[in-house]
Image 1 (spheres, rainbow, N blue to C red):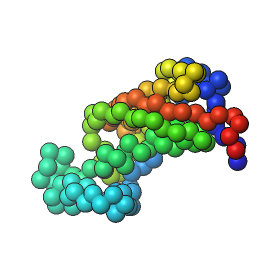
Image 2: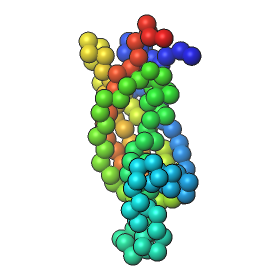
Image 3: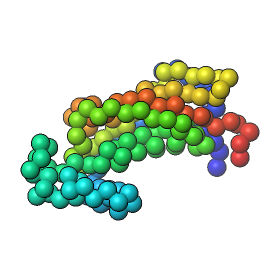
Image 4: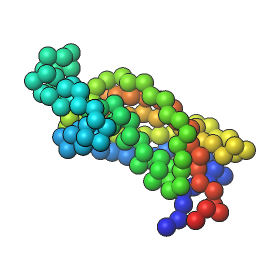
Length: 143
């Protein structure tokens, strides 16, 4: 298996995305892995009493949807995420289809760091989150 793009192969403005419909099993699986059983995520009756009116997906679950775009596409295999800043704009409900997109906005070849603008949109085109990330793409001499 090869590695993803090196910093010299990456172009400013390049984009990648991944799409996922957030299901019941995703929310319960995430709750089990992290131990976050906040009733806003796992208890429909409780969630009805909140301002959202129904259960919402965990923020960390939604955040992680950027990983396939970055780790499998751009830069791709061998990428190390250094940081990720996110600002929530709208809730993600169970059943929403989220498109996580990244765009290269800067690269520092001397330090081997790429900066991305990131966004998460639901099936209606509503931006549910946006942010920035820095990552180290693989070097071509890696195996």
